[in-house]
Image 1 (cartoon, helix red, strand yellow):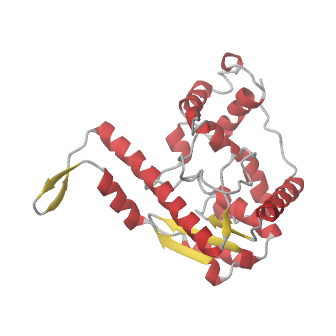
Image 2 (image 1 turned 90 degrees about the vertical axis):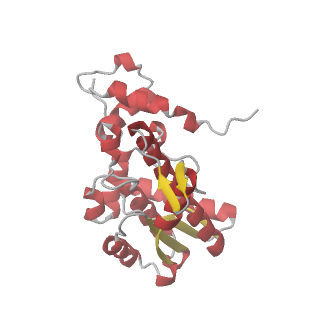
Image 3 (image 1 turned 60 degrees about the horizontal axis):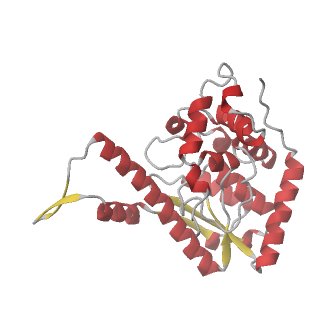
Length: 273
């Protein structure tokens, strides 16, 4: 069984997405967009697409970092797209994230302030994931506040692979007003990135949500995007049952579908009466 993700026509896709962005802005009576630029491929492709149909003064960009800012790379994108200095935000989210994480984590309190419990390994893992979700939601708060300030819509960066795998934070990185690449698998996003001439440093970097030091998407998954895309394409798009998907070709097929199934509730919330 050979799974082949359909190749896109990058020019046609760029034109289609550009029309979608333009029509959405006209329909909502907005003229501006703001995007959170992480330094990853999805946000880079999204902003380059926006740059095809909007003038630079109508694009606002926020690099909201927790660890180290990718200043050189972010400034390169600003320069290539001619984003005006007044439209650029490079902000650390470390303090609000740490303050919220401290507020919400169980503590043993002493007279002189705060002293953390010694957590179990399971609690440490949960705490790391909770803090990662706080990061995504703090970024969402800042993006939507800046959108309000500048009368802009928030441009999302979610791709189809992340969506079907449920690899996003509810009301965090999945929160947006407009999603330009949500119909594209990760491997298709790379095709578009090369056509749009996204910087090589971004294209060649390992995908990461930047949620903890040295975190990578594929390291967290335990499988590659290339394999995941092929499996979820067969399973979701072609409706091929899991037991019909070749374990020899796709040794992680079960793990991939289990990952998606575990997170499938995210695609349905909120539940209404």
